[in-house]
Image (cartoon, rainbow, N blue to C red; front, side, top):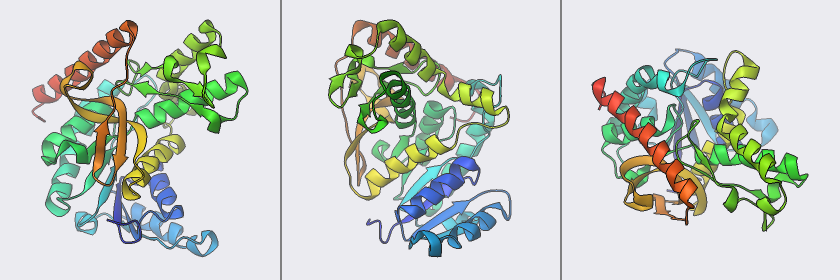
Amino acid sequence: MQPATAKVTVVGAGYVGSTCAHLAALKNLASEIVLTDVLEGRAEGIALDMNQSAAIEGFQARVVGSSEPEATYDSDLFIVTAGRPRKPGMSRSDLLEVNGRIVCEVAESIRRGSPDAIVIVVTNPLDSMVGLMRAKLGFPAQRVIGMAGVLDSARFSWFLSEATGAAVQDVDAMVLGAHGDSMVPMPRYCTVNGVSAQDLVPADAMDAMVDRTRKGGAEIVKLLKTGSAWYAPASASVAMAESILNDGRRLLPSACLLNGEYGFEGIYMGVPAILGRQGVERIVEVPLSTESRIQMQSTAGEISRDMDSLRDLGLL
């Protein structure tokens, strides 16, 4: 699988999905990028618009829009964004049933037409949706990954950049756990060009940024009033896809299936992982403080409850 010949499918032509397709085209991540949506004409129109920008932007990728599952067959990588967005006052758990059914339908199409693909799930509630996707696909766990930690860490990095006055590209931040209010930002692993962020930011300011990171998605939903974030989620998804397609082996926080790592078994959760041509090449374990371990237990409990709810709904 080489980017020059790869086929990438983005499922869902909403703001996140269409932005993913555009970024993938601009980066020439694949020779063919398929954008698909259940709403007839939407993906086709967006794809046509993107292709007409190719002469200006200079990308070589061809974008194909379709509402037919067959158009996605033989894809090397999927970015799954399909699902209902979160609305003001709606928790991610409220989305379990409706988005769970969508994920089941998408999984069936992927399993039937692209049995060797790597799948990046963006649909919320993220951790339970990627767990459901893997269960329905039956693929090796290294080929089914959730996008969350890259986004949450990017948000944390931006807040740290604002607080320190440092260039955001010099800030490295890490967020583990579930993608939601129980996520576990890791200040001890945050640096500004190698300098510990905890040496640059007062403890109370760091605590405020941790809290703001946990509520980062909800803050944007509240400001927009209709809709949710799309630029940063799309950038995070494409960063993961780029590392996989280019065999970049970047260390990126991703929702991976844990089999003993961090003391958890059989659960998808955000952890640092090296992403390469095979998907998850390795899960990296970092030392955790007692407080962080307690928080990880809490976030694992939340994910487990969501998975139990999916079983009660008959989706697992």
